[in-house]
Picture 1: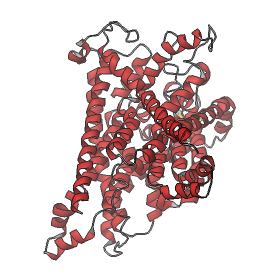
Picture 2 (picture 1 turned 180 degrees about the vertical axis):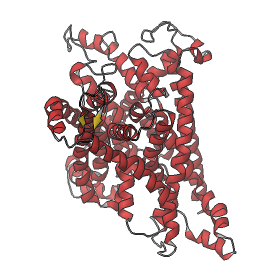
Picture 3 (picture 1 turned 135 degrees about the horizontal axis):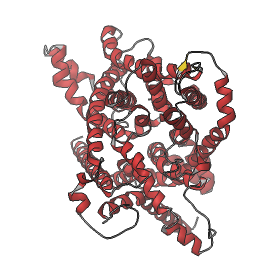
Length: 269
Length: 308
């Protein structure tokens, strides 16, 4: 290959990738821009810039209520799923037991099952058991699909843990509880936090499973689905944009700190 | 499957320590039991109730939505007869979305995983941009595309101006919009696993291909692509499965129309609107069975240890 075509080849991939990034960002930018739209009824045509949607975000009916519902559901489901998933992750790495591949399969299948099947299945179960749909059934459903993702995330962290550190604790006459609280848990914490953030994000944005199991209870995505037929208020764009900025800040901070840590380790090592 | 691609810690650290003690297995049991019971109660039991529901028959002289346990296997032939078109359409749309997502993602994943390898911070930025769509509501980003692709939008007017689109043609409400939406929404699921594969690709193999006078195309098809195949397969499954079951993109308040309804839409309507639970359950079981066959082939090839 001659240098000219090699240069063009490299250049083409750069151009393609930059265009691809722009393409991925289009609906995000659109959503954020239209959170500043001076829309009166329908937020479809651009009518001019305003900050009103941001300063009076709770004025639109149902936006803030559904947002708060999503936060409560997300926090509760995250707490439950993180606890259950972390325990499984520790067991999977640290212990050998029979039915190991059975447990792995049981954790894998919820991730491989289409959401509509998970949603309809739970709804059929709640129907058969006579359980009234509402906040509780949504939390139960969200916890279920978050567990597997927690296990995947925390397991990697447990596997990377040096058992010698815990042995050192035991050698110094620490009780098993002390070893766990002083050594194991702090070392696992970054993985547990990552898993909790992932769970919260999955729960917060879930619509399909929620729609089957929420009854009259309205989460933020469900509010959007119902409102989509008659037009989404600009205040919903405000909530989504704010969530987007918070999430991006989280990701950037975590990447910068892990980059700094890698650099420090590289210098010391 | 490369679900680990979604966690930043997945690739860090040494491989799993296999010095796991066999003794004290009651602790393992205590750790496993709550989570396993939970999944039994809220994952396996629901699947079982779907199977039971799918065979139910209407209560004699009962109201709408009242069914009793029966073995009415005709429910399956009925739904296949009524909704066969939707079932085929779902898999066809999902397949198209998977192919488009692969074509879109491979060069991008190669760029981030190989070209940006020497610049860790830029690489991290590239990955953040790929997952950025996850941070804005799934429904809102789909609605954003609906507005952009609407009849009054820029895209339609531009295409009409250059006569690529007829004067009465639409994009939204048509199959093309649904496949487009499915492709866009699941691109990150395709890009991340391919990236993970390419990130660990040893470039000396690629150089060896060049040293042995293979053309760049030959090197790509006999070295790079086979070495990144695990990522491509994971990505294809991660895109195909949610796309086949999706009903947001195809819904007529989003990108679809009357003639684009997929299996998910029919399950939703039958369950939540018509209260025809047996039909919804039978359709769910059909979808689940199709997915299980695909996943089963994958599990046989990779083994259960590689799953998580």
